[in-house]
Image (cartoon, rainbow, N blue to C red):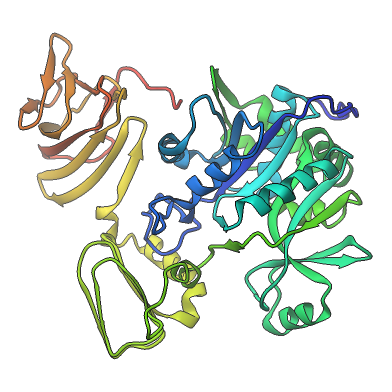
Amino acid sequence: MPPGVFETSKLTAMTLIPTILSGDPEFRLWSRAGDHQPKAFIRLSDGQSLLQKAFARAQQLPGVQEVLTVTNRELFFSSEDEYREIKREGMGTSFVLEPVSRGTAAALCAAALQVAQVHGEQAMMLVLPADHLIEQQAVFEAAVAQALSLAAQGKIAALGAPPTSAQTRYGYIEIKDQRVAGFIEKPGFEQAHALIASGRYVWNTGIYAFSAGAFLRELQAHAPGLLLDVQACLRTSRTFTEQGFSQVQLDVQAFQHVPGLSIEKALMETTRQMALVTCDMGWSDIDQWATLGDLTPPDAQGNRTQGAVLVQGSTNCIIQSQGRLIGAVGLNNLLVVDTPQAILVADKSQAKDLQGLLAQVQAQGLAYQAAQVQVTPWGKEQLIHESPGFKIKRLEIAPGASMSLQLHQHRSEHWVVVSGMTHIATGDQDIVMSPNRSAYISAGQKHRLYNPGKTPCVLIEIQSGNYLGEDDIVRFEEKLMA
């Protein structure tokens, strides 16, 4: 869509496209969700992830037929898996896939251009960060209806939450004469207390409602460079569309030139079209382990535990186990998180400062990487063990999924089916593999695994050879991302 083509049009029949911002794959809470799974994929005590809760919140809104997600390309398959578990029949999904994170301004600009092209400038968008919790769905829906009414008048409506404490980890919106007077991003401790005492500020939830056309017109007025850069990127990006599904893969080279800005800095602080809806919907941003731990009810000593945990003489601790037994004796105010990948022990007061530690882990390439689950176009794989000359993996092939036809020049592979059923195509034959059956693929032999069934197939793969690098693969056909 060329610049200057955002003409005002009357809202005849409202099309609402909830737009989930699922963000940066580097932003995570320790290793709970895996190295390639940021915090939106964390499963809460009810079994749902934060991303699933955002999607469920969106599809419950009246009249919604499609949910758009802006996320990193690495997270596409994981996101599809999450949605598949909870998506109601007939609900469409669309994706804008970023090669790198350039901030919420670029993400929303790309989303608005896509919505305007597919649904028209009059289509409404509701921005939903993926890592938030909202306890009161009915209050949320009433606030959204009010925000959409304002958006129909050309406004950009923000949802604000009444503050309950002087938080330094949230942004604030200033209210003056019932209007938005300004934004403050994550103030210091003393400033946060002053904001609360003034009575003129609410928490910025990051939830916005606007029409695609109004949003693009405001970007054209206040951030024209960003708009032009994203438009140029879309012209060289790949698009895939089928019934009930669409996907835009943003061009890597072009998107890297887009300014990295938050939408507040790029637009919300300067536009005169801001409107505010304040609502007490039980909102919280899960931005650190202490916040997540608070969702678990405490015992009489203030300890919040999940999994196999035994506590003695300890107070005010958050302790979570994903398998192994944790024994805690005489501890106070500690955060202990045990995952298959790593163990975290921290003072709760320091829980917000883990990004530096994560950066060290990633920079040093520590051994905990071996336990990570990798999401692939055909399912999942997990490295179990690696030694000179052999490697053991757990493979899970999703229903209806297929690997590309391929061969390996330096390694052979042995497969044992644990559960489900799969087929092995070797060029001259098709072998059906059921539980307890095994197969051998020699180096240089073409092969492909595929699962035509309706349940996942789990295999153990043993690789052997003088070179076991992941680049030892020759593909004869590529599966599309969608």
